[in-house]
Length: 335
Ligand code: SD4
Image 1 (cartoon, helix red, strand yellow):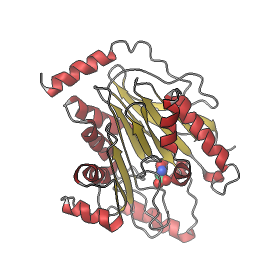
Image 2 (cartoon, protein in one colour):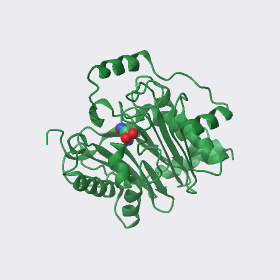
Image 3 (cartoon, helix red, strand yellow):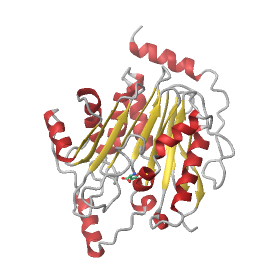
Image 4 (cartoon, rainbow, N blue to C red):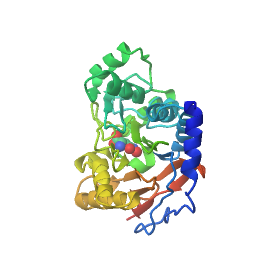
């Protein structure tokens, strides 16, 4: 049987028994009253509404027999190439020196991972991260070393600062005030989690990071355990939001550990958001703090939760296709 037919057969089997999807109280403030879950395989979940196009591409790739990692690279690659997505890849908002610097990582079901950080001039950092995973003895390459590796691998160096992003940077320069309000100006890091037809987990994450950051700043997104983590025995989690807060708390790794202890994906995301909130109540970052997590477990249950309102994620499965779901959140921006 061809890979493609095998995939379709497994996908069809996976959808049997999905039954009534128990979706949580989405877009609502307060506790997670029901676990968002579906239970089908394969399943793709990614952050923010540009995850819709990314999921569709990744889904098509899976359907044509691509590996989960190739599906992730192609899927989040749609956001990386889209200049309208202002916090990923080409067209991403630059740092305070007008440089677009990119962070990305990828991880597979064997816990192999690859990551690039502070990479400039390469439109698809997620593809370079995959090369780090496959073709080096390392997990992470950064800055000029990551660029050198990318060029050696045949990636093309190009200018990623669009006229629009340059214009916005010049406007920002007039005041040069750093206000990293992730949910308003900066909300587009794409993190994608895949549960494939075989029940294996993988994930990827790619971003131009917080706009107007200091030159050289690296966020959570390329850091395994912070922006992305998975354990194929348990589940996968990924983050968006203020990277500093996610790194301080090893956010995604903690979500996975809570799922290991029996929490549902939605409960685990909520617990870690609560923890991050508690640790930041008197912190200088609190006034603009936003963090959000998505998670999926081995059974195909998934969920998401954010500190503040406005976070959503795209979900794709066989039974319901691709849709956008609003995450439950703890508080509004006014609180
Ligand atoms: C960062 N976590 O570099 C990224 C930004 C982000 O939604 O996720 N924005 O801090």
